[in-house]
Image (cartoon, rainbow, N blue to C red):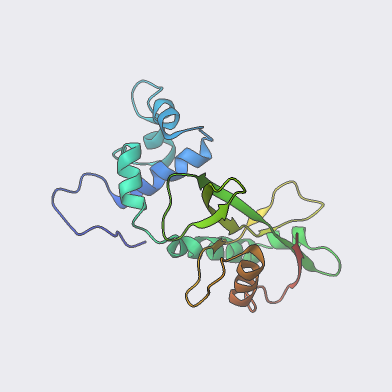
Length: 197
């Protein structure tokens, strides 16, 4: 991953440390960045982020945001592809086969940000009967599932955002179509059954 910052001798935190700091927030399932920082510093000696992830310096929540907000989310999609290929190569995907060697992939939409005050160019919006507007971000989050497996395999998302040249807001159906178009040859040799809600 390319560091979006200009090279500088004043750079305190590496991109790796910022990414690991952000990832650890989700892995440790903290309710907030502040709680995450408290958990990281809850032990004497080496920090949990240093011990678990090999981070050298631990950025604050604002520093993590300042660094990671400049990275385009789709630059991380290769990670999903690499993990899928690794699971395929090691034969793990065969455990997920159903109905004559098919993979089941539900395409489910979820909202991951909502506010009546904070919004950006990429926000969708909903106007309520009382005239208030709620701004939100949402995405299609496809996963490979199997009735025989407890775990799912996450695939790269498709963000539901305003599209160039379209007057109407983006929606789950349009995002699902974009995702399917991007992945039409990706799943060979498996047959795939898509499940939409």
